[in-house]
Each structure stands twice: as structure tokens, then as C-alpha cells.
Length: 434
Ligand code: GLN
Image 1 (spheres, helix red, strand yellow):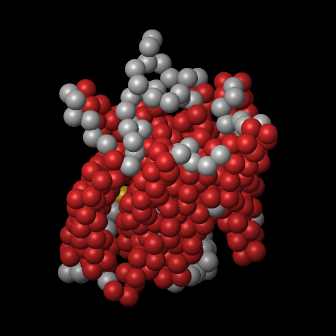
Image 2 (cartoon, helix red, strand yellow):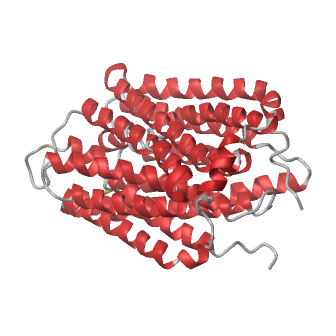
């Protein structure tokens, strides 16, 4: 079959699926564990909501921010392939450390996970790009498939790890997240033969020569447009990453979670966006593909601007929930579900598109570093998300949800105004060679 993807994609798919299982499993319970009282059957750390959201902010900022050193480590020293392995080991060690009681082990575990994700996340994404040659038309769909793998992990994790954490005990849940990462490592080690030379570092000599040659004007323009696109990324994730923080605590306190006399665990709602990605990932990709077949190709930058506006509009539903909750009753579940639905449609316009965009535009010698920078931008978004969430404990939830909607709408419109100028800077990097 002409359109078959390289075998290496399966290996990266399952490795990342398990890594994300471990990541999102832990994330689903993080603020719940922090804010749970220190007494009772399943004691937590008894923090205030503001403190928990502040830690969430810093965790999200650092966990993706470490992608910069992670990318540099790969470009300069180890290559992506080995750096991913190091990352997996650090993450597994971190999750298992969280499972050991004590505040010292809690912080040590977080530090290990932060370093590990920094090594793994950007580099495994660059490796996906490395499976395809320049101009290969399968690249975008390869990233969509990879993105679905991410979300299978992200979907299963809150159901499994979240339920164990909320119903049996937080430590078992952290342990479970650690086991997930170990499974990912096993897949990765097993699959090495299918990755061939993907993610190997160029020989030190070649790299030395390469470093000395300056960027061509076209390469420079492309780096500039990438850096501008990272600004879009910061704003997008600042909105989107409310999910694990403010929206998670909001779900616990103000959303009516009872269905047929059964109260759904809060953490389970963290699976909802991932489920939407799995269901809609192919639909959105097919929609763009159909448009491009009709000769109406939309550039990545256009899709990203649209993504921000769609995700932002999801917050209108959260404003609706907040209005209802302010009358003293719990808000209807449908508000939350609709918000997540729009968040995901926006995400699908932006996130897999951005990954692919970077692997098309970044000069080869900076491939992993640019990916590192991209994830650092998502981290900055995550940090802002936590801080904005924290603001809601003072300014009120309705105000914050509505504010995010307005900001995204204005920002997206501004991008559309300038988008032709930005597109010119890509110098046709998005054209598909047949
Ligand atoms: N949800 C995606 C993932 O976990 C993207 C996260 C991000 O880029 N910050 O891979």
C-alpha cells in the first residue's frame, strides 16, 4: 500500500502512549491529592486551592520547560534516540518515588518526572518527524496517528490511575503511573530495530562543521516564523491547560457529577478531552485533507489561529456553568462536556499541526532544540494557565472563564489579520512534493 507508514511509527506510538498514561494519570490526581485534607481515609496534603494551583502552574511550566535542555542534550550530545531512553528511566523513577510517603519524596519525585519528560517528550516528537523525508505527504497524518496514541494513554490514565487514587489511595496511583512508564520503556527497547537510524546524532565531526555554517536567509525566515508561532502556542495552552487545574477543582466542587444516583469520580472527567481527540482526530484531519484536495489548502498558521478561537469559545460554556453555580445549585454536566468538546476541536486544529510544522521548518541541525523550544512554549502556557486559575480564587470563576474567551477571540482575530505576512516567511516549506 502506497500510504503505509514506517514501522517505527508503531514503536513511537506505543512508547508515547504509555508515557502519557503515566503523565496524565499523575496529573489527574495532582491537585486533588494536594487539596485533600490530611485526615480521613485517604489523606492528602491539605493544601489550599490557591497553593495547589500555584504548584500545578510551576509543575506544568517546568515539566515542559525542561524540553529546552532535553532538546539541546539530544542535538549536542546523545541524539534523540538515547535521550528518550534516559527520559523514560527518569520518569519511571520519579513516579515510583512519589509512591513513597513523605514530603521530601514528593518533591524528589516531581523533580525526576520534570527532568524525564524534558528528555523524552520533545525528542520522541522530533523522531516522528524523522521517520519521513522532506515533502513526504504522510508526515501530517503520521503526526495525527501519533497524537491519537498520546490520547489513548491520556484517556485511560485518569480512569485507571484516577480511580485508584481517589478510591483506594494516592500512593498506589503514583505506583501505577510508574508501572505505565516501565511498560513504555519495554516497548521502546523492543522496538529499537524498527527505528533504524532515526534519532541518531550526526557524527561529531559533521555536527561541528554544521554548527559553523550560518543559516541561509530562507532558514532564518523559517526560524523567525517558528518563533512567532510559539507565541500562539503559549496563549493556546494557557487556555487549554485549565483542564487539569482550575477546571478539575471546579468539577469537584461546582459541577453536578451525579448520574443515576452514582457520583462520578472527579478525575474521570480528565479523560473526556482525550476521548474527544480519539473520536475526532481522524475527522478533523480528513476535513483538512478534503479541503486541500479541492485545492483550498489551509496553512498551519491559519489552522492555529482558528484553533485558538475555537478553544476559547469553549470557555463560554464554563461561563454558563459559573452563572448557574452562582445561583447556589450545582451546574449541569453538559456545560463541562461542551467546553471540553470545543477545547478539543481547537486542539486538533493546532497541536498536531504545530508538531508537524516544526519538523518541516526547523533547520536539521536545530531540529530537536526547536522542538524543545516548542514544548517550553507549551510549558509557559501551562504556567500561565495555573496562574490564571489561581486568579479565579480571588477574582471569581465566571470572570476568569469569560476573560479567557475574550482574550482568545481577540488574539485569534489579530493573527488572521497578519497571517499572510507570516505565511510568506515559510518560503513554501509546507508544499508537498510528489
Ligand atoms: N496533549 C498533548 C500531549 O500531551 C500536548 C501537550 C502539550 O503540547 N503541552 O502531548
